[in-house]
Length: 326
Figure 1 (cartoon, rainbow, N blue to C red):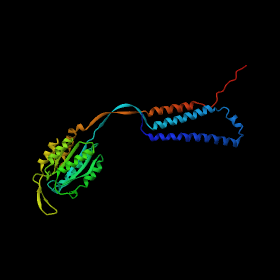
Figure 2 (cartoon, helix red, strand yellow):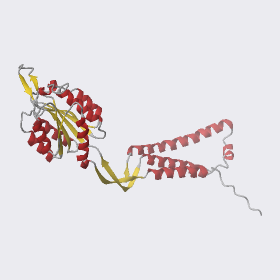
Figure 3 (tube, one colour):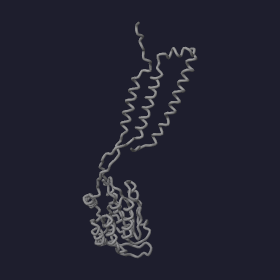
Figure 4 (cartoon, rainbow, N blue to C red):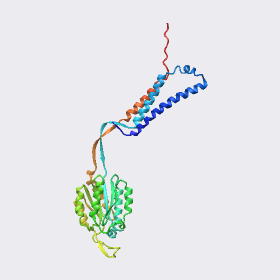
């Protein structure tokens, strides 16, 4: 047997209070009677009233009160089989915030276009938990896995290349951090990597294989163009052309069982990616059977109702005994 809301049973402590109040009412009634008549007349006035039936009615009302309190505590016993299902997925976006994401080979620039794509993606999700990682030369978990999609969009709007703790682009660090973030949840899930692919560490492929072994599938989204755009280093003033390295991003997706998409101004790839994720990740929608206690509070509610009906049928008078004729 299980009691779901044990604290409600503390209401049973009111029963002694009610008994004390009932006894007090009886004494108060006697005092009021003495104001209008001599105490000797009380026995005559109460001659027809039955102490037994009066006591029985009070006892039944207290019993009904006890039944209602027990019902409020939600007693449970016996078991029933129930199928539980989980329809949501864990999805983490890893967004490149390195200086190369300021390139304008896609309007208005790579980072802004990436943020717009993720926001559009988020608007079409319902039961999934989302997380945000920003990375450059190091990676930061900006938003742990959450089902609060408005909070996710607020974090997205705050991302900029100025938030990068270290210059460069180290995709491997983002993949490492994603593994820890997924492990903090239910484990496994989907990672969407958004970058121009200019990886300085060169270990992203190995890290992607490690994530795949942990049950994480990576979908990469390339932003930029193969022709590239001119980037100026704000510290040294040096210039270089930053190009989209789609080959690296494709390989990262392939070794993890995911796919590569290119971000475009039309955002048509969002629909393709979304449909592909839900087709490929059906195994995430799982169901299992569990045995749960049956709710039994209705038995006590019914018992309280029957007791109240019985109490109302009892008259608090003595039975009249007819004298037999001689």
